[in-house]
Amino acid sequence: MGPVARARRSPTNRDMILSLLVILIPVAIIAFLLTRGQDEPNVPTVDWKPVAAQAAKEAPYEVLAPAELPAGWRATQVSWTKIGEPDPTGNESPRNRWRLGVLTDQQVYIELDQVDKQAQDFVDDITRNGQPDGTSTVAGQSWQRLVTDDDRTRSLVLATPKVTTVVSGDTSYRLLEDYAGLLRAQP
Image 1 (spheres, rainbow, N blue to C red):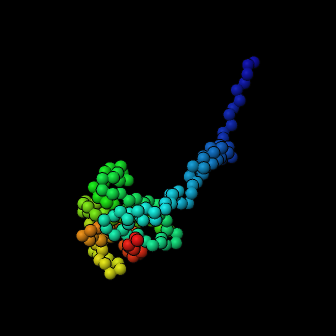
Image 2 (tube, helix red, strand yellow):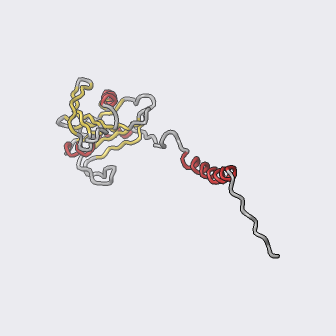
Image 3 (cartoon, one colour):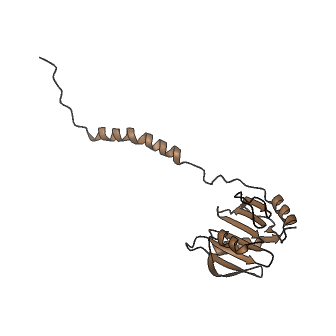
C-alpha cells in the first residue's frame, strides 16, 4: 500500500483570528510609524527686524510693521525688494515691496504687504481677486475688505497716494483688524 492522504481539517475561528493578527500587527506598526509626526509643522522663524529697518531706510513710503509680535506669534517670511531687483519668485520687481508673513499662536498665517507701483494688479494677485466685502476701521483709518469667491481668504486694503498696504489671511476680519492695529511706522 502506498501513502494515504490525510483529510484536511477545516480552519477554526481561532485559526482565522491568528492569521488576521499575523497580517494586521505589521500593518498597524507600519501605519503608526508613517503617520506619527510633529504636532506643529516645522516652519522656521526668521529675524524680520533688520529687514524692516533696511526697508524703512530705502523705501519711498512709510514702512509699517508691528513694534513687537504678540506672544506665541512668529515671523516666518520677510522680504524687501526694490524696483528692478529679483522678487521672492526670482522675477524682476516692477515695484518696491515690503512683505512680512507671520504665524499666529493658532498656526494661522497672516501676511502684510506694501507696494508703491502697479498697486491694483498687486492687490488682485495677493488677494486672489478678492471681491469687495465692506470696510473695517482700524486706528481711525478705513480699510477696504476683500474676500475670495470661495470665502476662504480675507484681506484688508489701505490705499494712499504713496503706498498700498494689504493684510491678508485665511482667517476672520477680526484677527486681520487686530494685526493691522499693531502696525506702526518703522523708524
